[in-house]
Length: 60
Image 1 (cartoon, helix red, strand yellow):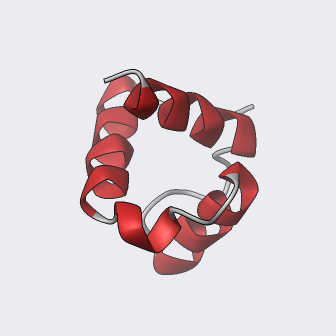
Image 2 (cartoon, rainbow, N blue to C red):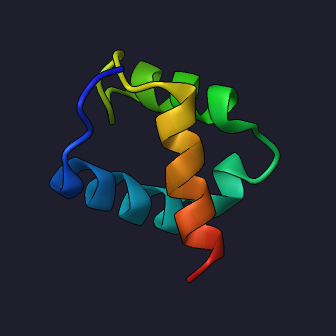
Image 3 (cartoon, rainbow, N blue to C red):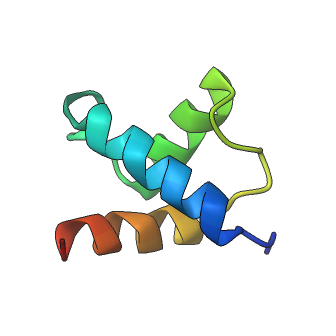
């Protein structure tokens, strides 16, 4: 598992919030693949890490 810095996690959270409609029907792996293909996050970020970010967004 790669180290996801707090700064990168915050940036990904903001990106997902701003583009929530685009990712509403995707699971964590689908979102990870989309983010990697757009160059928004590095390919070594795991679906589990994306899942943690999504859970944090739900709790806000």
